[in-house]
Image 1 (tube, helix red, strand yellow):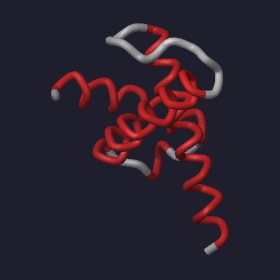
Image 2 (cartoon, one colour; image 1 turned 30 degrees about the vertical axis):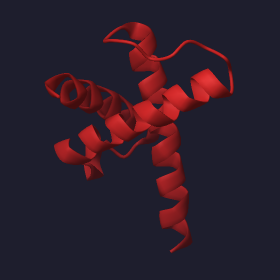
Image 3 (cartoon, rainbow, N blue to C red; image 1 turned 180 degrees about the horizontal axis):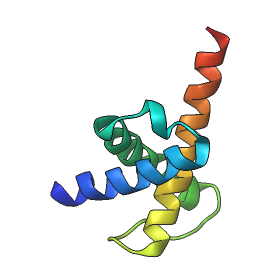
Length: 83
């Protein structure tokens, strides 16, 4: 459980920096974004690109989680722009 929180916080924070949403996101939002982004990135990496699954705390897993988090934040930004 603690691993997911730390991993999610790291991935969510990096993704929010990439997308430019860091100023408007807090720690809880970064953690949630990172955890959900990990699932999105892992799903896309394994099912679309045929890459290995995310396993443990390593560079590959962080990159996949960050990529998924960037996708998630981009989708959220597009939805908010329409409102």
